[in-house]
Image 1 (cartoon, rainbow, N blue to C red):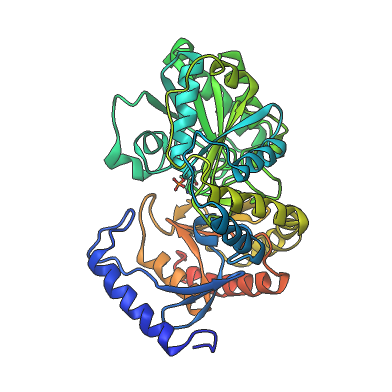
Image 2: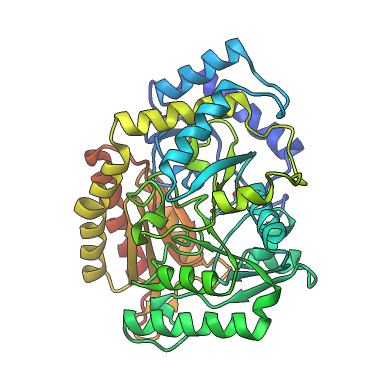
Length: 452
Ligand code: PMP
């Protein structure tokens, strides 16, 4: 227990937990057995749990708080905006939204000069697909297996992880393709170049077999996040851009998780110097301090809706509090060099540390990432690559590894057989090293499950 949390805070937290279990319906959970962790407060890279324990947040709250918790500049901007104008109908101009749109248009590549604001990532995906369908007049959507695009109907249909299964609609118009994923190659590739070539050939086959004349959009995370931070091999994204251009398909780069400095560039698509037709964003745009997402739109797609009404909208499109938070977040990221820092942390600290762990721990099958966006994939057997937890599930072994991290004072992000190292972009070097040392120790537990 730390002095930062009072006995009263802890008592309030206990009450909140009781009320939660009685009245709050949680995302993705069987409501009965779920035992959520209470968070009493947070600051920078730390959170305090219901017992007052101070934990290092290596999860960034679903890879969201890129600038850490309670950044004073952003908190002040929200307070100032709240004192001036809390909300306004979306058809009116508000200065926070205008400035946020200008800043985002400036940061996005190429001619993505227009921004439609949403409440989060899933509705950004919904609207991007709607724009693509209307722009092309074509209905089908290509999306990758091993992806996550959100929990609303169409967003979960394009999602390529098991959360889709219970929500699938055969009439969604979505067709999934195999992504380039070198560690578990679907194309039996043994080199990066081979993976790129074969994955692109597969994608072109899919387009031809599904009928290019039917396919309006292709959605792909610039770096797939929740599904394992697996880096597209060299040449793959440029190849996807080429194929979508060749067949008249709108290329939607989903940057909801990978954007706003997460991988050491403002947008992860910047790693490959290409310009998609649409970018979906959320999370890092204002570090989630107030719900906000959006679609950055190319000039060409904008033209489709110059004289034709866009059939879609949201009461909170460009909400003043959310947009004021976005302006302050982007300014703080620039002033404090957070994107550069993210790149440096990945190159100088996280990458080398994880590679050293991979050399030392037989349970580590693969490490990969960039910036503050890394995954450690755990296996029972390096030869067969049998995962420490099955695809789409958990295992007692993984739970023990996660438990060991928590015992070391870490709030981790774990998914299936992976631990994701996704700290705030402005985490101190010292805190980051502490977190990595805790991971190193927890991997000893994972090593215990490796088959002799
Ligand atoms: N796309 C990607 C790539 C995501 O990571 C997420 C959320 N993790 C979403 C879309 C959905 O965003 P939201 O939860 O804000 O609806």
